[in-house]
Amino acid sequence: MKNKVLFALLILISVSSESLLAQTLKSNFFRDKDIQTGFTAQSWNYGDERISEFVIPLTIIIPVSQKFTLYAASSSAYANLTSSSTKLYGFTDTRVSGSYVAMDNHLLVTGGVTIPTGKLALDPGQSIVASALASYPLNFKVPSFGQGLTVNFSGVYAFQVQDFIFGAGAGFVYLDGFKVNAGSDLKYKPGPQVSINAGAETNAKNRGNTKYTVDVTYTFYGTDKLGGSDYLKSGSKLIVDARALFSANKTDIMIYARERTKGKNENAGVPEDFNSNGNKIEAGGMSYTPTSDKFGIKGVLDLKYYSPNQKEMDGAMIGGLGTGFSYSPTRSFTFDLLIKYSLGNLKNKGETAKITGMELNGGLKFRL
Image 1 (cartoon, rainbow, N blue to C red):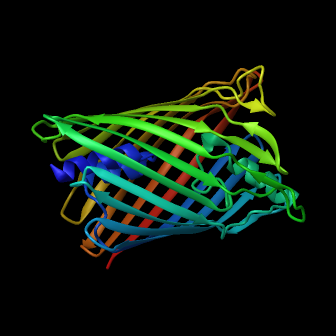
Image 2: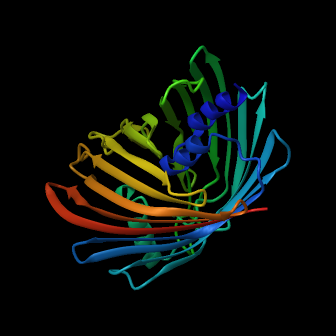
Image 3: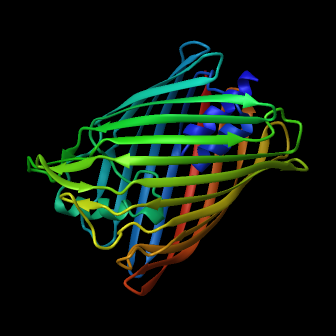
């Protein structure tokens, strides 16, 4: 029961479909000392424009005890936009965090700090590249090189009732902000964030072949400040995430559907006339088929539909299909590779632009 309750806790705090797949298929708390690295190469083409990024991440996982684990993560990245003569490269911010399980594995507490080791103050050319990287539909591995000092704290409690697990939690994020441009003392300070979430899971006793999960998260945003004055208050965000996990012959499969909605932003305390936040709907699936004890084939499918906002901006429809493998010659070493091709369009002010993308991910994990 302890492992299954912890399994639900991990689902409740997860926001990444890829990281969730790894958690759900393995269903364990990190209790091995790991060093993880690799690379991610992403490139998108639309019209005469191309935006590309190459990232080398590094994550260190240190189990202090059976209940407490420390994590440290950072990346180096290089980004290029064809319409900009300036490249963006360097280290990203460094994330240091810890997770502690308590109350007979019913409670998971996580806290951490993001240290501003990344590039914060950008020149005008770099700002153009950074703006392209931040485009939400493109889902770049590193959408921002630096956001300044960030502190977060969260807690999730879960309990089992017969064949179901239920849980709820809350989290808080503080952001210290960053200078807007190189050579300027003008500082942009995002407002604090408070999130509450609840989730449920079926088949807690693993008597059936299929497991369903649902997770709902609501986030409130404080007022951003520019130069010490109120500037923008982002609309509250609601995320609903549903998943099904099952096996077909030797293949483990996870399918998911997710929707994100946001309310109207406020500018200097005044709500905007038209909501600049459109609905974002995502669906897809992942699979893993072991061909031996050391080798397995992976597959991924993702579909995105982002409706244009009330200003008829930021619409997108993109589909991606990928495959790869995982190779573990020993218990201490794993190599993963995944390649994905995406095709779709972006919609702004009634105009549609075709977009294509390629992504190559390689991962190395060393278990010490």
